[in-house]
Image 1 (cartoon, rainbow, N blue to C red):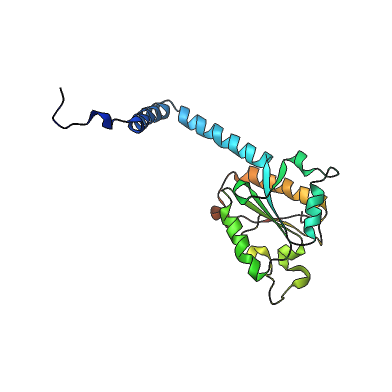
Image 2: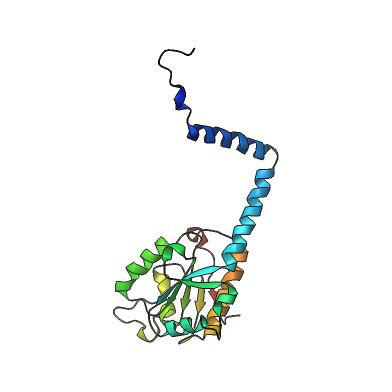
Length: 197
């Protein structure tokens, strides 16, 4: 018999899972299987992340027509693993294609912050890169990179759908090179400019 007032039901399922997890963790560390599984899982997630780029599209102005054209059967961006989404919580890539006004800067930052890590940004067109024809206007930002970090620049007014697909290819190469590094830790990484080879 146990001591007076001792609660034997306190050893619940959560405690059992923690105990089994600790024992299993120590066994995996001792046999080096944990390190192998970590490397294998990291490579698998890197492969899946670059093969299916879920893109949050922002159809701000005329570049949105070229973005939509890249998803049509003629160019078919989906065969390259580019799937356009309308929810930031299910997206890997923020595609900004149009001038960013000072009033619209806060919603873009909010969308960027809602996206899960690792996340990437593509600035498509002169308006998103530098303000375009609205350069040094009173209410247009001089590029989206003033509020969020940009990984790939696709110049043009507007850029062709082939250039957008090429930009996704260059982003894929960057993901292979850097892996799943969060966006805050990539501050020293240089952005890619399409056509600047």
